[in-house]
Image 1 (cartoon, helix red, strand yellow):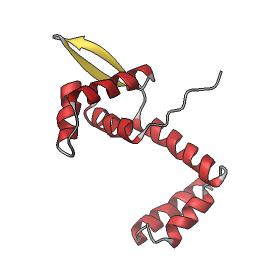
Image 2: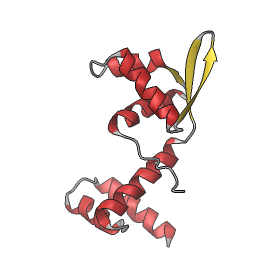
Image 3: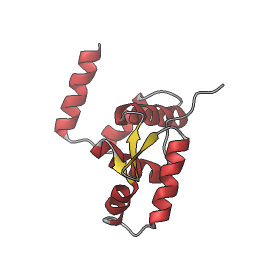
Length: 124
C-alpha cells in the first residue's frame, strides 16, 4: 500500500498554518483568521477541517461542546514532504536545478545566499 501523501492543497495549507501557529484551533478560530484575509463561509472551513481530519492531518477533541483541532504532523514534516514531491515532479528528484533557478532569478538575498553556502559546507 502506498504511503499517504503529506502534500496539502493551497486551501488546506492555509488552514494548517493557522492550526500550527496556535498548536490547536477551533473551527471558529480558523474561520475568523481566514476572514481577516478573504471572504469565506464558516461551512467551508468546517468542511475543510473534516477533510484534513479524514486525511489524518488533524485530530479533534470535544471540549465544552466545541471541537478543538490539533495537528498530527509537524509543519516541518509536511513542508519537507511537499518540497520533496515538488522537486521530484519538477526536477526529477534533483534539488540543484531549483537552487540554480533561485540564484539566477535573484530570489535570494546576499544574506540568504551566505546562509545557503554555510549550510552546504556544513553538510559536506
